[in-house]
Image 1 (cartoon, rainbow, N blue to C red):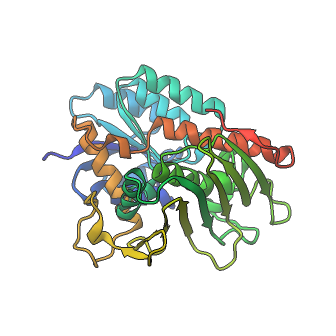
Image 2: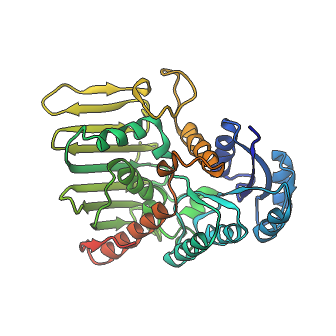
Length: 365
């Protein structure tokens, strides 16, 4: 099958997430990266394109959208891997040009930017995809299937933790610089990793909290943005939950965990051991499920040959390629515009709640 021509905005030399997207896009041979506006600096953009073997390098994403839409061999999709505050401009430009958009999370840095993307997506014939990669891991998809078929009964308790320690001290470097700048990030730990926790719980349970109470803190002195978030959740079904997202948890590398407790059982999954899902039926011993029991078949190697973070992104890219080619069978498991808007509503509600000493606040998209 001929690979889909792909472009990229951002992701030049020194960028972390751009490299991840490039590996994922080519892992299953579904995409070919042929064009890019890899940096706002023309010389750096050109050098990055040459280093990566990208045929067509552009000075700006505006020029790229217009030129690629006009080419008979132009890109059909674009990956946006810029800092949060730079998602809206390219997303809107490519949607307006009829080119599918694959955007890194969160949707945007501000509510206004998010709404502008939503308006462009609704008016475009192109699709918008959001890369919350953890929901594409095989045993997360299996957990979702188990919840949907009633394996834990009625949902009662949800607990998600996403703990990192890399920002426990005042930090420099490109990745820390923009993530701790309110103007570019929009939100701190709650936006960078808290939105992952929110989307993961929503994806697996099929339920969205209706209200929350949040305490957002800047633990490192002088930091102008939150680096620790503790949030209580209320669901319309009566379930209760909590999210703890921190980037100052010393000793934690990338500790994302999900625990669900229902009337008839429980589920537990951890990103650092992604190929193990613990299902505990009520009054029975725990069952340890591996990829051998995953019904989604979202993997490339036999069970026991570990797949993880990169493969999660690759699963999304393969599903996105299928949708672009007209196969919508797995579209419901790809995060999209509504997931992005839900994440932005979560951020806004948490920030409002925290400013009012944890006052319970409705989560309104």
